Structures are given as C-alpha cells and as structure tokens.
Length: 153
Ligand code: ATP
Image 1 (tube, rainbow, N blue to C red):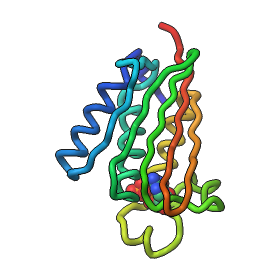
Image 2: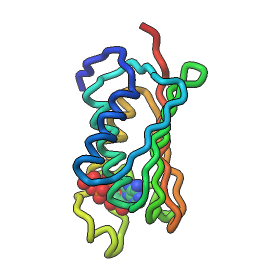
Image 3: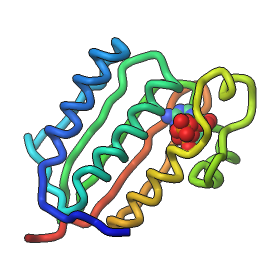
Image 4: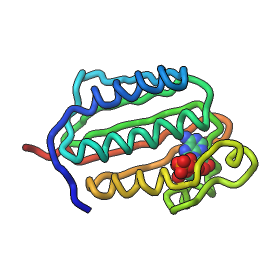
C-alpha cells in the first residue's frame, strides 16, 4: 500500500467527525484531548477512515454518549474509543479483525454491516506500525484502544 505520509493534528479530525455524527445521527461523541492537540505522522485520509469505522461501530452497538480520548505519552499516541453499548463476548474478540466476521446472534443481524470495518481498521493500524486492542464487557460496553509511535519530522 502507498501511504501519503504527513504530520498532522488528530484532534480536529476527531472533532469534525463528532460534529458530523451529531448532525447526521443526533448522537453525542465527546472528544477528550487534555493537551489540546496531538500530532501523528501518518496518512491523514486513512487515519480519518479508521476513526469513521470505530465511531460508526460505537454508534451502531450502543445508545449513549461515546467518548473518544486522545493523548500522547512518551512518544506514543494513545486513543480510546469507548461506548456503553452491548459489548462483545470475550470468546469472540480474537476473530473481530477477520474479514466478514460478525458476532453471531440476532442483535448483530438487526444492524446493517458486512463485517469488514474492523478488518480494514486493523489494516490501517498495521500500515502505521500501531496497535489495536479491544476491551469489552457484554452488557456494559466496549473500548477500542489504539497506539501509534509518534515519529518525528
Ligand atoms: P461493517 O462492515 O459495516 O463495519 P460490522 O460492524 O458488522 O459491519 P466490523 O466493524 O468488522 O463489522 O465489526 C465486526 C463485529 O464486531 C460486528 O458485527 C459486531 O458484532 C462487533 N462489534 C464491533 N464493534 C463493536 C462495538 N463497539 N460494540 C459491540 N460490538 C461491536
């Protein structure tokens, strides 16, 4: 894959998506960025796509406010996308990043989707030498954690 690398601030990208989700779906996405701006070196369009996928999932599988927390600690950019939705059973978590995988059950067929989102998300994270992890508790919600090396220049 060809990456269009540049250095950019993540916070306005997430702010813009939050605004878009509010206008389009009347859903609240709270953006928490204590330091104001968080710079990342990467492909801006692909990173934006990554956030579209994660926020879209959080909206599809929950009803309440969604929290996106962005920070940078010791040369590492860290992002948490947290929802208080239906959650994911622990035994399903290892398969989430496979193509066309959807958690079984009526609840997942009731929402649209083909099960490609998270496999694309994982691909984008890998292209940026990052890490994606899922923490979830059925009935309580899900947090997707991203980590990226904060490269200089
Ligand atoms: P799409 O291809 O439109 O993204 P999808 O949401 O089904 O469809 P993925 O984004 O790959 O596909 O997600 C895979 C499965 O993981 C989903 O079908 C859903 O069961 C589960 N999942 C993903 N995100 C969440 C979340 N935030 N809360 C609960 N379940 C989730």
